[in-house]
Amino acid sequence: MSHRTIHLFRKGLRLHDNPTLLAALKSSEIVFPVYILDRKFMTSAMQLGTIRWHFLLQSLADLQASLKKLNSCLWIIQGEYEAILREHVKKWNITQVTFDDEIEPFYKEMERTIQNIGKEMGFEVFSMVGHTLYDVKRIVELNRGTPPLTYKRFLQILTTLGDPEMPVEDLTAENSQKLCPLPEEDLDECYRVPLPEDLGISKEHLSPWRGGETTGLQRLEEHMKNQGWIAKFTKPRTIPNSLLPSTTGLSPYFSLGCLSVRMFFYRLSKIYAQSKNHSLPPVSLQGQLLWREFFYTVASATPNFTKMVGNPICLQIEWYEDAEKLHKWKTAQTGFPWIDAIMTQLRQEGWIHHLARHAVACFLTRGDLWISWEEGMKVFEELLLDSDYSINAGNWMWLSASAFFHQYSRIFCPVRFGKRTDPEGHYIRKYLPVLKNFPSKYIYEPWTAPAEAQREAGCIIGKEYPFPMVNHKEVSDNNLQLMKQVREEQYKTAQLTRDDVDDPMEMGLKHRHSEEVTPKGKHARKAEEL
Ligand code: FAD
Image (tube, rainbow, N blue to C red; front, side, top):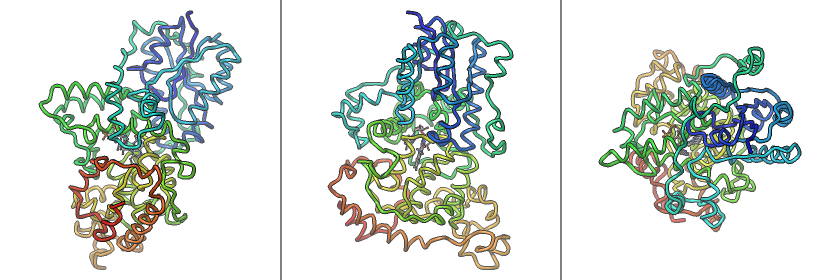
């Protein structure tokens, strides 16, 4: 049967390696590419913050422009998704609705709703996996129905599965002839990408990141020119406080599916095949994609993955509730320039380096403030361009040592961590201009500068910039004891599953930051015996 199809874009905002859309074209006489802009759903379920709204609108505009080049269009329809779908199924005599299979509970719920509407209105529903390397359900099945909780175990299962599916062909004028032609001009106006101000979103933002498949592909191609860098990429050696990203900076594009992870995976394989020796997982670039896959797999099969309560893999910890301290962390007023510079970059630009994420996440949770990882995750959700249900929660559990990560005695020092790779504090000077005139020896600890040096720098600590909100040594010693106690009490639980070789990314860090890890000695050793 030849269908009349709505292809519903949710993530997967691209025309390269889009298996669901390609399959829809093969089974249909006409395909309407649709994006339903359901603001209620997007604000409540997806937690879109301002910067990500801009990025999304840019990505939609890019997709629309690319579809126009194929003589079609992207129907961007605003409203509640159920009502919009019903209306357009009727209006266009739709017999099939297609969309990428996603793992997030809010998308799963949407899928069930669409299935039910389909039964009621008589259309078929078809979906394929396009956002991950594998169908993560297969990985869980092969692990006897439970998600693998260590990277090592995860990789073992992948050996059984073999390589991911190859990317499918890009959409071209030849294979996209069934796309519905451009609507007439007035319709074009109705279906255009809304302006931020139409949605009540502030026009102003400082983010240099631009959304869309075109920019994502350009960024990827730039990296591909540097084959040596790709082959030797070793994540722990990348610099958290470089002024331009020292890693690929592709995460915002993967997160909305402007770029295909399978395509990237195979582009990397090609480079690895041509290089004499290349880095390997977990620290290589393919290893990074596998971390992504790992968190997607665990998230797909873990109830309440983004919460502590009711989450079977997460340690149950009595974190402090302290709105004032949380606010200081969130708004870059901790008094630790390294932490505040990172939080400023996050707020202004929507992207920070992985190790910078480590620094601020450790500081908020088990390191200094003993505030729940869920609070930090929500702030990241609001501010990160690459915010992702599985990866964000997974990494927050990791950093707070609530799951996956066990070397909890290693606490990042909010002074020394950043200093190692940027002793002059260029990064701090850029993001915290109030401190820019401090001599390098004080830039990470401006409160130690004599009064005269502070006057000369034009910034009096306690007035123009806050004193540190905690005594790092004292609070981190105390928190280490709390964590040790929690783990002793809950030592029998599944979340303490571990492989000793499972934290090699952290081992890389240990190597570089060994002297930053506090505290050492008796307690740490005892704790690590767990
Ligand atoms: P690269 O190093 O170039 O890696 C390439 C790709 O691999 C990334 O784009 C990403 O898709 C994937 N990747 C890399 N590191 C990880 C990782 N540790 N876990 C899973 N996938 C990874 N990443 C997100 O995409 N969304 C999030 O919401 C997110 N939240 C995080 C929260 C915390 C507390 C921490 C510590 C990390 C978080 N990360 C998140 C993981 C990681 O920091 C980013 O993926 C990475 O920094 C993005 O930069 P990049 O594209 O240059 O990465």
